[in-house]
Structure formats: structure tokens, C-alpha cells
Image (cartoon, rainbow, N blue to C red; front, top):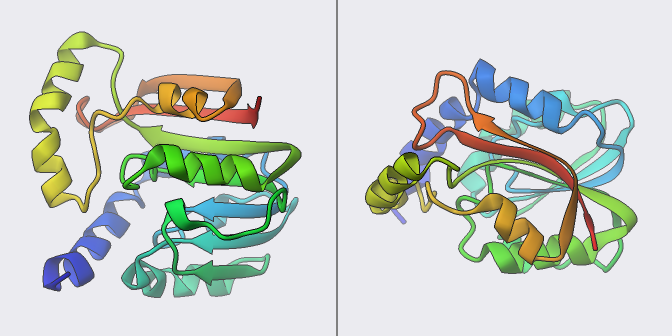
Length: 205
């Protein structure tokens, strides 16, 4: 912990996560969300303006209290109740089958144990509930993947543990989810090494 990780990095990430291109990804990813929602990796609350009217409540989980402070205005402006809990994604203690939807946006790249976090997400979904996600990660192009592997350790050090080369689709499938919808592409305006995006909706198998 220190000045960079506690103060500088959350503000840099808030700016990076608030671009128009990423906002469009959020809008598309969250279009079908409804009911009670668990959002894992809430950050500075950038998803809140994109939740549909069918969302009745959001439980926001994130370990960064600095990011939570940056989210205050968005929480206050949200049309639905938002409860923030300072927890890591691997430590979700909500009851089984307690949410209609789980949301993860640009989070699985950073959590220390994606498999554990996804296991909790699967556990707390009600029967028929869905996981809505948009994440950046390992590209399909072998040339891009090689650069992701080369640069990953620098990314992890500078971006608070964010990885360039995690296989998002494979990790989600391995955690017991099946995709109803999936789209993979490069984010407009972003470098290919950090801009390969997986957006989808999945259900527990």
C-alpha cells in the first residue's frame, strides 16, 4: 500500500475506465440485466448509468475504498438502491442463489484468483440467473498473444495487478458456465495488447 496504489492508481483507472469506447461496451453488456444484481469489481461505479430500469438493486463489491470514494456521486445519482461492500471477488459472502444477475466488467483481469471469484458468482446466482460480462484479455491472434505475454509483468506491476493475457472465455467456461451470447473483438482506439475484449452472457451449467 502507498501513495501510488491508494491515491494515484484508482484515479488513473477511473479515467481509463470512463472512455466513450468502454462506455459503449458497458451499454451493450448490461442491456439485459434485471432484478437484484451483484456487481463484482465495482470500481468507481462506471456501470451505474448503464443499468436498465429493470434493475431493482445493486450490491457492489470491491476491495478499493479509494475507488468507492470516487463512486459516491454515481451512487447518489443511481435510480436504484446501491449497497457497497469492501470485499474481494474471491471472498463474496452472500447467500447461495440470492441474485438474479451477476455483473463483471474489466474485473477478471485483476482479481487474484479468477476461478475462485467465478465459483462465488456461480454459487450466488438463482436458478436461471445470468452472468453479464465484458472483460479484456488474451487475444486470438498469436502475434498479439506473444506481445501480451512479454508485457504482462510490466502491466501487472503498473496497473494494480491487471493482466493482459488471461483467457477470459476459457476461464468462464472452466468455472461451470455456458455462454448464451459471446462476442470477441478489439476495443476501438485501444492498443491490441490491452484491447482484446470478450463480451457475453452466460448461465451456470
